[in-house]
Structures are given as structure tokens and as C-alpha cells.
Length: 186
Image (cartoon, rainbow, N blue to C red):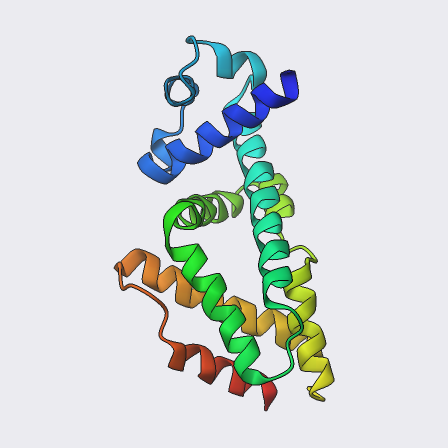
């Protein structure tokens, strides 16, 4: 029961952050969003730092689950077009619906993590099925240092998502993803 309540509160905090930004993230706002009595959030997360840590931990878990699911849906990456298709799927998910909300929260947390090493440690990119699929694809195509190239490619894709998110520019153009994949393969 307590773990379910913590998850509910972390999800509500994520929603508050996505809708109201970092300044709007308060214990009271989370109580309201979760439709719980005042003081509930502070009973589970005594400080704002504890609330942020719970939110970021939940965000990473949701992101990891999304990446695992996407990797399973795509199957093996054999061609550059397969990789572009996978990145296009990821960027669409990150820019629409719940994925968009998580992206807004993720970037707000990333900025907060500059001054908070604990948050930074939680947000550090983790190994996951999606990242590993990209690394294996690049290694299989003879790319030197596939770990660094994977990191660079995914960081560039993240930058495109950020640009579209803040400029409300719609989907990431496929040509941009094709260019990034081609550069990673050089």
C-alpha cells in the first residue's frame, strides 16, 4: 500500500512538473493533483528534495520501460533504415501524449540536476534494450568505438527532441535522423 501511494504521488508530481514547471512543484500541488488530503505528500516525502528524488526515480523507470518496449517492437536493427525507423518511433513517443509530458519533466529535472548530484546520478543514461540495440548495430557495422558513437547519436537525437519540444515544431524530420545515422556510421 505504501509503495503504491508513493508511486501515485510520484506520478502526480511528474504531472505537476510537466504542467506547471519546477516552481509549481510543491507538496500541496501534488496533494491536489493526486486528489489526496493536504499533507499527504509531505507525510511520504518530508522535503522537496525527497519529492524530486522520487519523481526522478519514477521518471527513469517509466523511460526505461518505454525503451524496453520500443526495442521489442522494432526487433533487430539490420539496416540504417531500421535504425532511423526506431529513432523516429522514439522521437514521436517523446513528443506526443504522455511521452511529451515526461519529456517536459525530464528536461526540468535535468536542469535541476546541475546543482544536485543525487538527481544527476539518477538521471545518468542507463543501459537499456534500446541503447544496447543501437550499440550492437553500430558495432556490427564496424564503427570504431560504438559506445561513444551510441552516446553521441542518442545525445543528438535528444537535442532534436528538445528543440521540437520547446519550439512546438512537430515531429523530428526523418531527414535529420537519417543524417545523424549516416554520421554515426562514418
